[in-house]
Image (cartoon, rainbow, N blue to C red; front, side, top):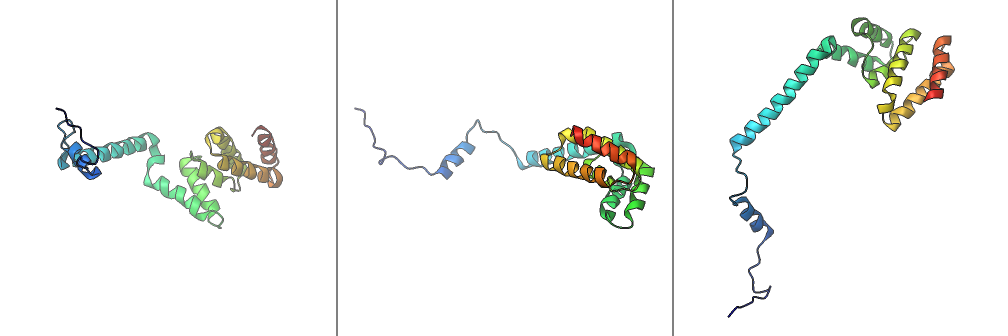
Length: 163
């Protein structure tokens, strides 16, 4: 005779006990603390290695001096030391590659360098967020209205039409 149990008669198992039983399963992967530590260290080594390889390919722009020079542009933006910081950076490393530093260069006094920064930013424009695009358009609009250099003003006006 088969006896059927009501649900109430069965032993209620807690979720904690269910999880514990899963952990004891012969099919569950067995990972020791040593394995976890080795895995963590391996991931750290991969990141460190990639970072060093990136620095190698970046040349002078992968050094701490470059980072400091770029940080100086950001730190001195809006002060009397800004022009000197930008000039030192451009003399040493040329035009920066990153969007944020390029946008700071739009406030530099050398119209030729600002034109170069605008051209570089135009190439990076499509990959930017909507907020960055809006800020860039506003900056170009201001340059089109206020730039002292005629070529810079004309270039900014033309750029506005294409953005």
